[in-house]
Length: 146
Image (cartoon, rainbow, N blue to C red; front, side):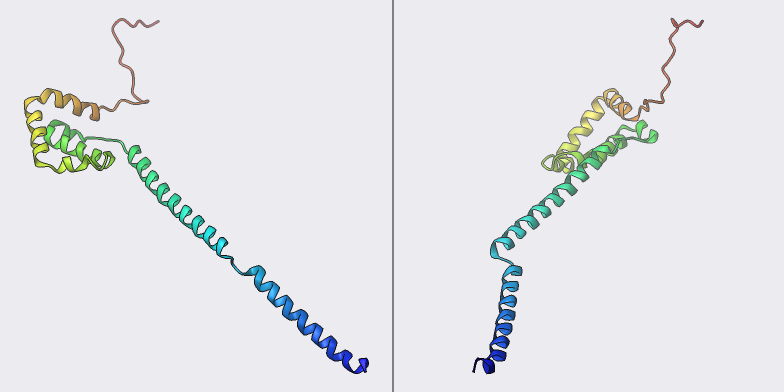
């Protein structure tokens, strides 16, 4: 009698084992809600890091830009000041930028320029001077040659 039921028992054990393997595999590979929450946190953290990195890279690039005034603008203080303000504006805090568009502030700057042209010319010359590592030091009269 057992000999007649043996193939059915073996077939049942194989099917049951296969079902157990499928169920165990699905449970192992299923994403638990906790791991999904952690994955979302990592994704938001990475997104925040990327945006911060872009913002700081932009600030560094703006800080690396040199402020310069062309020699033609150096002769005319109004155009030189406007050029310097345009170059400095992106580096200023957001709360100060609207002041550069304020007509009263611009008129105050214009009045200051008109009343103190020598001081403004000195400021402009600071931006137009081209002293650097390649600049030759000026020789004085008290230097002697051997």
